[in-house]
Length: 243
Image (cartoon, rainbow, N blue to C red; front, side):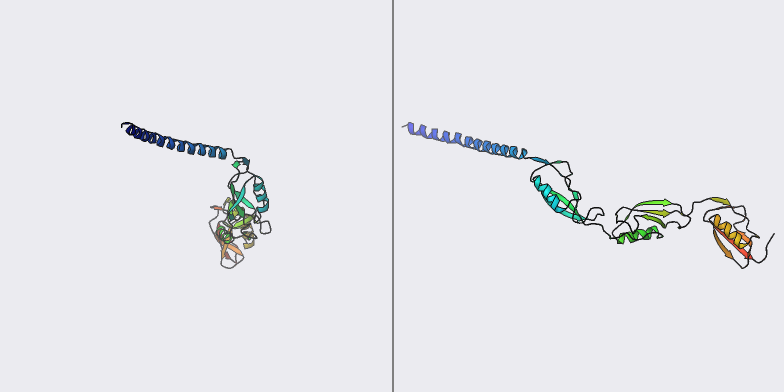
């Protein structure tokens, strides 16, 4: 009479023991599968990233395909050196190791922003910057130089010039005006206006006159005071020479 009771308890214990075993086996199987998958991925072949800079889409695609990679176009940007439709940038630098079957992101060149460089010489720096901005360009370097011909803050020269190849790197030379030299102001009184003009030009001074006549009657600044390049000398003219 007791035997059936013992047998029922034994079956319950067996089921209780089998459940954790099945669970453990399932977990073990999952870990094993995950480990094998990881090992397979970790042993994927790596290749060296080729340089795509300046290459056409066809050439770049052939290079990547031959290395088990593929091309992903991410956008476009202006550039004066790389032809339109060619590779300007790549997200993985050339020479780096990369796994197969990876997409390589690239930026294509849209070519130069402008078809020609505008003439900037004799323009003010502010005006030159505005002109370039309207053409999608900008000044990359400013060099300031003294000039006896071009007034201060105006463009003396530019590189490249309008006839040269378009470039995003534009350099301009901006005038600082004449090189400043300090003089003692000469005594112009009694001097002919022609002779006074000649001397003033040699000293890189500016001249303003008033009155009528062929000779200088008075002046400002007074003789012997300091004047520097670019200063203005005011002369009062008359018809009689003063001694």
